[in-house]
Length: 175
Length: 399
Image (cartoon, rainbow over all chains, first blue to last red; front, side, top):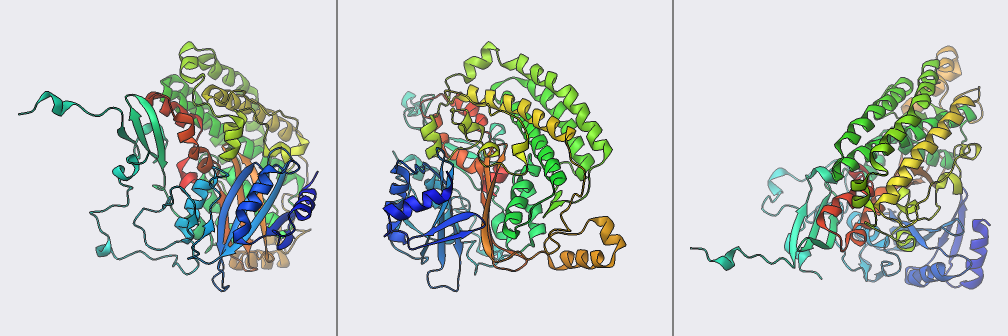
C-alpha cells in the first residue's frame, strides 16, 4: 500500500478538513486550517486504515511576505503501514489560539517548544511552553527571516546577574 | 550555635543538578532531577548548551557548503549525516547517483555506524563501571577512522559526498584496508561480548531498567536502537530503502522488553550486521563513473579529470564553485537510518543557490525527551545507565 491510498482515505472521510493537496518529489503535503489540526490529528491517529501513530517531526517555515507568515509542518508517520504525510497549516506569529498536539503525541512537547523558541508561535494548551535551545532571557526568535544572521547584542547590555539558566526553584515547585 | 535540626534536610523533595559538566552526560546535557531519598521522582533534561543555530546558518550557505555543517552535528557519525543531507538535495534536484557511488556511500555510512556504536559501547560501559571495554572499543575505532581518512582525507568530518556522487574515486588502499578490517573485526565483537553479555554485574545493572514499551516509544517518536530495543521493527534501511540498501542481505536485530540491556544487545548485533553489509558492498562494488555528470550536467559537478582536461568541464566546475547549484523550487524530505535513529532533512528551495530552510529531524532530540518516562522510580545511579543507553549526542540535540 502506498501513501496515495492514505490520501484517498483521508479525502473520503474528512473532506471538510482538507483544503488542498500537493505532491512534490513523491511526498504528499496536505493543507488544512489551524482550527482543524486537533481533529485532523485525532482522525489520523485513530482511523483503523491509517494508524498514524508517530508524530515524527513538527517544525515551521517563515514566509515574511505572506499575511500569515508562519507555516507549521507536521510530519506524521505510520509505523504499521509505512505511510508518511506532511500536514501544513498557516498562522500569524502572534496567533492567540494555535492548538497544541501535546495531549495526543508526547513528541510534540519538545517540538512545539522549539517552534516557540525559534519563531515565537505560542501553542495553546501546551503544558510547559518555554524556550528550549536558547537561554530563557534571549530576545527575538532566531529562525525568523528578519532576524539578522550575524549580530550580537553589545556587551554592556548583557545582564550577568541573571544568566539564562532556568531557575531551579521554578522547576522543582511543579508537581 | 547550630542545633541538630539545622542539619536535617528534606529528603522527599530533593533537587539535584546533574550536569551540564558531568562526565556521564556525554557532552553538556543538564538534567534536573528531583529525588525522594535516592529514588528519581522527576528528571527533566535541559538542553541548549551547545546550540549553534545550524539551521539558521545553513540558510546563508550554498547547498554544498551546507554539507559541512551536517558534519558538525553528529560528529561521531558524520558520514551518515552527510548521506541524509545529500540524499535530500538529490531528491530536490531529481538527481540519482551512480551505483558505484551508492555502494561507497553505504560502506562509509556503515563504517560510521560501527564506529559510533563503539564510542557508545565504550563510554556506556565506563558509566556503569567497566573501564576495560573503553580501551578495547577505541582500539578498533581508530582502525575505522583510519580507513575513513584513507578515502576521504579526514577522520571526523569527511564531507565526501557531492550531489550526484562522490568527491573522488576510491582506490585500492581503501579496499585492502577494508578487507583487512572485515577479517579481524568479528572476533573483536566477541571479545567485547565476552566481557559484558553474561557478566553478572552487567546484567544486574542493565536488566529490567529504564523500560519503555513499544507504544510509548512510538508516541515519543523514538527511533533507532532505542525503538528496536522495545521490539518494534522500524528501520528505514528496510522500510524505505535508499542508496541501494535493497541489494544487501542483512537482518534487523530486535529486543523484547525495551530495557537498557535490550538496547545494548541491539547495538552489538547491529555492528555484526553492518559488517555483513560492508562485506557484501566491498566485494560487489560496481565499476563505472563515480559522478553522474553525464546524466545531470545541470546539478552535478564534473569529475576532476574532466574539469582539468576539457573546456566545458572547466567552465562548469568554475560555475558550480562560484554560484553553487540551483535546485528547482520545491520541498523535499529524506530520512536515513543514523546510528541513533531516523535522521531526516527537510529542505525548502526557492530556486536560488541557498536553501530557504533546512530542517533537521534529529534522532537524539526525540530520544532524550523520553528520559523522564524511562527513569521514573529508578535509583539515581541508574539514571546514568539509562542516559547512556539511549545514546544521545549533544551536538545533534542542540544543533
